Length: 424
Image 1 (cartoon, rainbow, N blue to C red):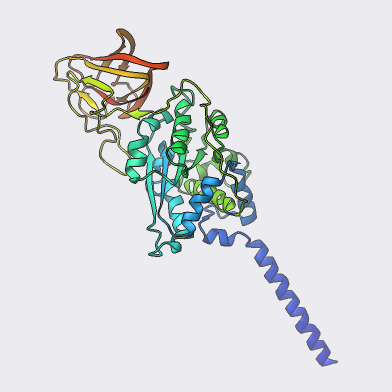
Image 2: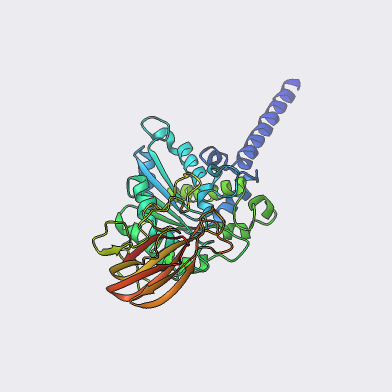
C-alpha cells in the first residue's frame, strides 16, 4: 500500500511539474523574440505586447523585396539600411540620440542576425541615419542622394521613410513622398521600402500617405495606430518627451514595432514580385528629381554676391558640420548682386533657412523672381528660427521649359540659399 501511495505521489508530482512547465512556456511565449531583438521596454506581459506590436502593422504590402533583404541577412551578406525622416528618425527625445529608434532597430538586427556574418559581429549590416529635425518629405527628396545613397556608398537594401509628423504643411501634396518611394523602388529592383508613420499628439499625415503607399504596395507601420489601442499598457508620459518626440522607451517601442513586423514577414508566404506602377499616382510628378550642385550641366548660375558658402547650415545630431555644403551665401558686407539661374525644368524646390538669433550674423530677407515675376519674399530673420531649413516650391508645371530664377538680397543683411532641387 505504501509503495502504491509513493507511486501515486510521484506521478502527481510529475503531472504538477509538467503543468507548471507548460504554463511557464505559455506565459513566456515571445521570450524567444525578446532574445532575438524585441526589447519590450515597458515590461508588458508578452502576449499583450505582441498584440500591441501587431496593431502597428497597417499593411504588409508586397513582401518580395523584404524577403530578399531577409535572405541576405540570414546568409550573412552585406546589407545596406537607411532611415530617412525628421527629428524622430534623427533620434530626438532621449538624452542620447543613439537611443533613437533607427539606431536601436539596427542594433536589434545585429542581435538577431549578427551571428550569420563572417565575423559573427553584424559588421555586414551597414546603416545610414538620414533623419534631420524639423524637415518634411520635400527636403528629404532634395537630400536623398546625398544623405542616403552617398552616405551608404550603396543603394539601400532597406529604406524606412518617416515623415508623417512633419508633412502637415508640406508644399507638394505628397508628391515628394511619392517620389522618394518610387525613386528608391525604381533605382534598384531589390530595394525594400517601408513607410513608417510616427505618432504625435497632433494630427499626422498617415491617411494621405497611406494612399500613396498602398498604390505602390509598400508595407506600412503605424506607431500612431498602436499608440491609439495601447489602453493602459503605458501612458502618454511614458512614450512622449513632449508632443511628438519619444522617450528612450518610446523609441525602443518603435524599434520593436519594426522588428516584430520583420519577424512576422519572415514567417509569411512569399509574395510574387510586383512591378512598379507604370504611371505616377499624382501629377505633375517629380520624376528624375535631383539636387542642384555647383557643376550641373543643365543649370547655368551667376551667383552674384551669393558666391560664398555658409558653413552653418542645419546639421544633424551625429555631425557638427552643416548638412548642405552646396549652398549659396550672401554676406552682409557684400554688394547686393542678384543670384541668377537659368534652368530647364518643370518644378523647382527652393530651400532657405530661418536663422533668427542663432548666431551673431544679421540675416534678412530676399526677393525671389521667376521669369521676371516676383513669386516670394523669404525672411531668414524669422522670430522663431533656429537655423532650421525651410523648403518651398517656386516652379510647378506639367512640362519642362527654360526658366530664369533671380534672388535679390536685402542690403547689409545675410541670406543663404541652402539648397535647390528640380526635375525636368
